[in-house]
Length: 285
Image 1 (cartoon, rainbow, N blue to C red):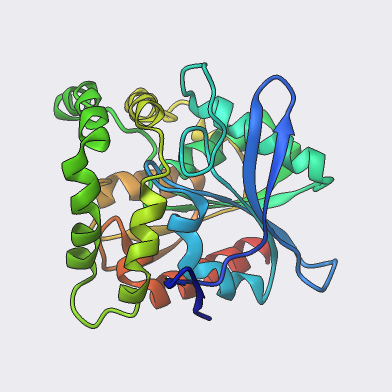
Image 2 (image 1 turned 135 degrees about the vertical axis):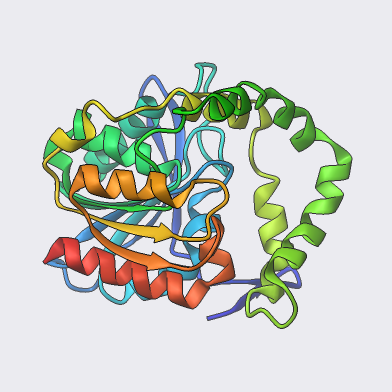
């Protein structure tokens, strides 16, 4: 359902809220409550450089028909809390756990896309009582196995300068349009998408990239014992499909594949929403 504000087309978005996390800062989250109080609750955990809206807006309405959900913006991403502390994946998981507890939510199924996968796994490891099941999407068991990957992540600091540049700010709208291609159903939302991308804090984005570059759950993922399902993006050039499959094997996850690249939630919005619903239903069942 398309909306409009200040002449800009907007997708349907659940109500947004802020919550003060003691000793941490002010956290932004979306919260949709299903009319049926017995409906399961999902926790939406977005990827690197994204936000809950940027990552999941194409699935919001589909998921809202069946579930309650909370979508958080991680530290330095979107409207996420700004912290003087270095970005750590386990801190992002603890942030989400605090939000759930303050909302009085006992258990969730996590939906973690890209960086949201490691955060959901830290949540299941550190707060197992909160996690009923996990859906991991376009993500990996580890992000640093090869020499090239380690070198690439060490160079992530350059990204901070790019994100702060005026050239990038002018280019991003054009880049999104090119990514989507002509006649794509999301083209009316390009101005909104571009404005949301600019909410990120460049320094925190760099720190989050370094945290991802140090992430390796090979020694503990298979011991989580949490029901899991996985979306594998088979044309992914950022997170190789073989890495995604290694994670699915470690989690003993039910797998659905989508022949698309890493930004599948934008480029294949209908398919992404349908598969996300299917995976959540599988885990809930």
